[in-house]
Image 1 (cartoon, rainbow, N blue to C red):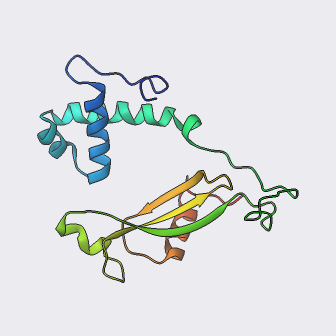
Image 2: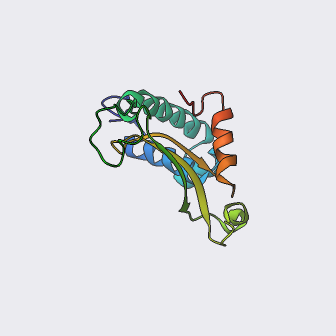
Image 3: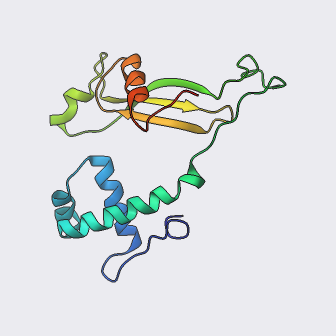
Length: 158
């Protein structure tokens, strides 16, 4: 999809797989250009350039990957959703266990002592995600929701 729809391609010195691997590694481990460059044996400028090209390709996929919700109609026959007429979906927060470096564990520690990330998710009736907000810090669900609502391009309630 990144190649066909996003227009991303490898270069003479770097394959498409390596570009995507650097991009995902940087996002997953919250690393800087310099440390990614050392890991992949590339310059910081090359890492930055390829990261932005990959990001642009991912953003071109929004029409394919993102789902526009439709309201639950009055004649809905699904037992789980027919009580929620005119709603677009369901919202809930959950914790997802994560592996982080030991120096960053305190900010991911939950009140029960596990290392996890708080995630706010909104799901349409057909079980497709409409909105996802990962939250690094241990926080109450209302704090995460309030933050999502206050972001300029964040979650909007119609």
